[in-house]
Image (cartoon, rainbow, N blue to C red):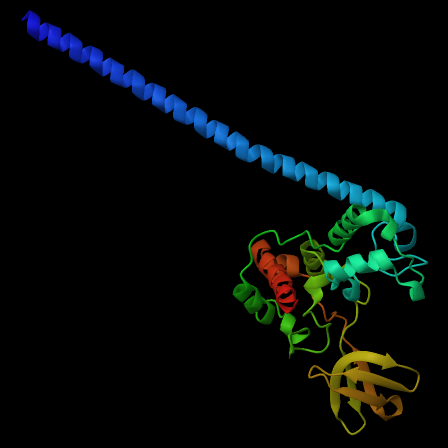
Amino acid sequence: MRVHGQEASEFSGTGRSIQQRGAWILAALICALAVSQAQTTAPRTEEQNQSNQALAAGRRTFESTCAPCHGLNGKGGEHAPDIATSPEVVRLSDRETLKVLQEGILQKGMPPFVALGPTRLSGVMNYLRSLQGKDKTAAVPASVKEGKELFAGKGGCLECHMVQGVGGFLGSDLSDYGASHSADDIRSAIVSADQRPGFRKGLAKATTKDRQQISGLVRNEDNFSVQLQALDGTFHLLEKSGLSELSFDSAPVMPSDYDSKLSKSELDQLVGYLLSIADAKR
């Protein structure tokens, strides 16, 4: 009996020893994982802080060097053009932008800033990119296919706007719109169209004295004539003396109810689609 009891005691002690070793191993693994996570998180946080500091430095240089002519928001002033939303400027590559900053454009009155050095010029360029909206993306990952279907279908955008050579003629071509506008800018243009200049424009309906009816957007008008652009893109120059009636729709061409007509997810898909086609073209 003592032998059996001794064996049971030794077995129990061995079991406790195994449990203790298991607990030590588990604790060691937890510590190792914690250290690994800390080592991974710390460089990322440090890298983000460095990026924020570099952007802040670029902003200070921009405000002291560029803003007096181009404005604090980069959208132009009395002495210099818009460099935040102008497609010609936004399309420039980083190399081309740095070249302009270094060499200037003397014929247009812009002096060279090569004396600032490569680090400060790079900071200015990065801050300019933030003003151009290139550091902003859509709120959610967008499906290009779904966004395209909304653009052509439920949104009704394709009836007036053209994209990549397909669509209507009454609105602006949106193929490059996402290249010079951020996701927030595009979303605002969709849901706050009634705040944009020229929003109140509606279609005009002209009836000639021989009872021909023409509907379109007024492109030019004076006391004697009116020029209409029809939905198919054709222009009609009509003498007012030859018209029996000329009326204007009270409803604007651009709808103002997209915030209720489309869900937030659908708006995100539209925004993502316009950004994606601009990126694909670039």
